[in-house]
Length: 86
Image (tube, rainbow, N blue to C red; front, side):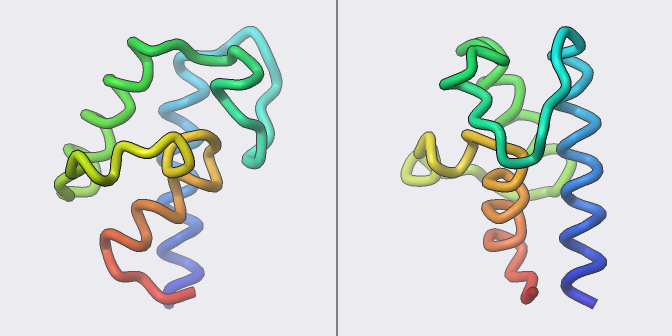
């Protein structure tokens, strides 16, 4: 069950990210910030999306670049917050 839930999370995150970065093909492992695919305003929008879409609270300690640097990282972060096993 966990893998299916993670796949659903990944699809929602991917759809959100793609809405803001239509200029480039994005892989789930691409570092969104290093490759300048997104900017700091996007990171605020991303945190708000994650909180609203998945009904989780992103705490100050969660605001590590490693949690939000790629679609895969965001998926893992959300899964961890929701306590979904792989």
